[in-house]
Image (tube, rainbow, N blue to C red; front, side):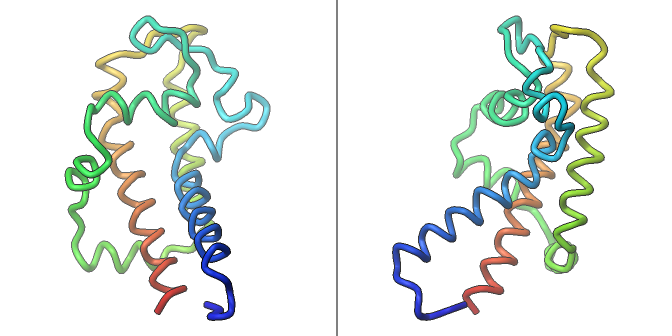
Length: 148
């Protein structure tokens, strides 16, 4: 909120906020430390070696085959009431929601090198979209609070 910051510092801080708030909504970023948030959980994404963290960081989003603009337009359906409720959520609730989601994701991995494919996408795309949408709304709320 300081008007005293140089433009390059403001830009850096906004970039960091975007990154950190996005990461809080990626379930594997709030997951178990012992396996580095799913990095040590090896899976096969359509028969290609990967890990659970990478599936949630990249693979699921890329599988939708949408540009960032198309993706944002496809999931951006909230009412004012929904946005207001999300704006009021404390950060601890964002983290807890991601953590509990991560535990559900872990529970679905039954074996090493489990194959994840169309069924996995089908089972999780709505959750992925919800996380992306909430990240965007939470980020908007933080930025609106800073720059109003």
